[in-house]
Length: 282
Image (cartoon, rainbow, N blue to C red; front, side):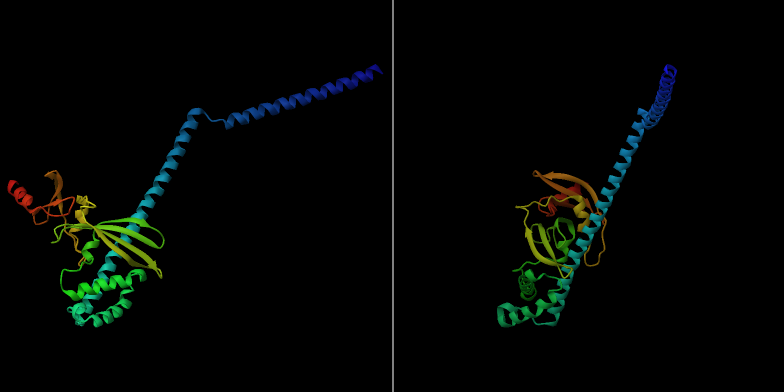
């Protein structure tokens, strides 16, 4: 009887030893697996740096692509502004040539109203409904007065320092600057467009004089100033320097014909006296 108990006891102990041996082997294998998962610190650092570099490169690529896309969009909007203003004036010039508009409002007010109603429909292709009546009236006054009493935007006002200041899916606002062209000052143009029937149309125009908003003219701005919006031809200019005249910053450039031009960076006015002195000293 005792031998039977002893035999059973030994059998139980043997089973326990085999189980412990198996658990021990499993534990060792787990340690080896875990050890394989744990990277060498130097290798981990290199891989981490590579990942960061890859992430940075991807982010940089996305940023570059976004900037390129934004630049392309802005070029399209600039072209839209220029083409819209050009088409408006082309239409008005053709109408002026084929109709007797001389002193129309002053001498024939009833005919002025009829002509105003007539031109609104074709102008609606370029001007938003909300601005159509006011814009058409101003345009007709300009083209029938033959005088300097009225001011209206022109294609030359669209080309310098174009900058989009606000944009959504159905509107955008932009600014350009105009250099002095006989008015005694330059100014900042403020444009607004809205989308109607999936077409961008002019919805507002205003201008601000330099005493309220200085132009802060740069050489990059002047690079566009010598582009002809009518012929789309351009002239290369050369930057010479910035100089201070009576504590006002002036920009000195040289044109292709070697003429020197000096601009007041606040007003966009050329300083002819300074130009003569600069050319003489040169």
